[in-house]
Length: 167
Image (tube, rainbow, N blue to C red; front, side, top):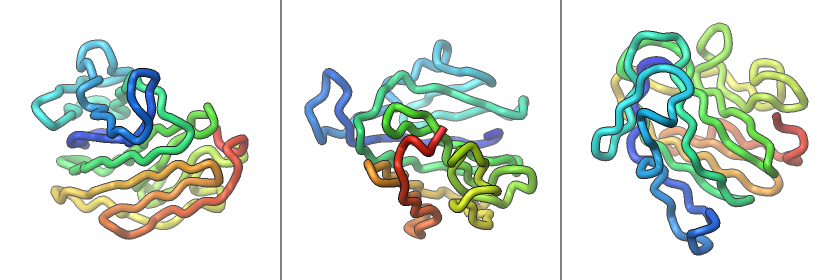
């Protein structure tokens, strides 16, 4: 979302060239000129920063995660009130963790579950969970039987279900 800065992100995973269980520094894979889908991005040291301006900043990291993995992000909302969406994959199917999202910017959950957005499916919880100008550590855990998300050590989402339900 607009106005977020994500610090170094890591996911223990197994891309084809990495041993199982070895952490992967996803930030080192980002090319700020090639990987943005929308908006302007800058990589500086251990930070990936979106610049204010357009509504939906997006960057796609060129990495295919293993079947089960953890993604750890340290984020800080520098401006704005828009949502932070984190794209994940389960069973080869992409889906999104929405934090402070949807229409009122105060719903967190997974999208899509059974074709429904976070404010319409069983994962939707009221937020917001990201405080302005305060760092938050987010842990997304993708397992064969579900997905959990914690923000600042507090479990926000604990969904149990098959990967064929996400999209």
